[in-house]
Image 1 (cartoon, helix red, strand yellow):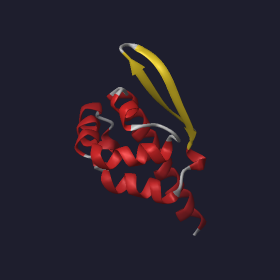
Image 2: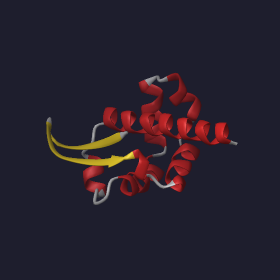
Image 3: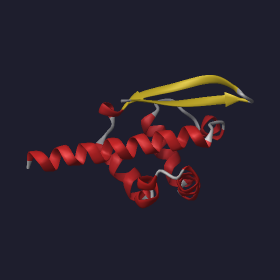
Image 4: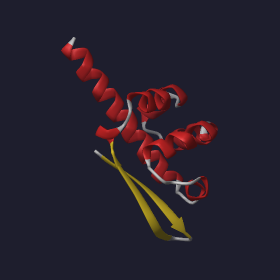
Length: 106
């Protein structure tokens, strides 16, 4: 699954970072799952997910830098919360599906 982080100037996308979930390090996914409140992501409520992201923003910036090579703090400040919600929801779904595959094999 491809993840995209859009950087805006006003209403215009000026840059897009892309990564594939298959390239994610296990530790990065594990850290993200530990920081985010998973019960709120499971419900899919965008407002709750946004609040969760904002509460953990100091911890999530390094994760975004791990995910998207070259992104800066300044660029992260110019992203939209909806884009971050989509990224972290997709990461959560990816992590859960990977964990399920591992448990099915065992």
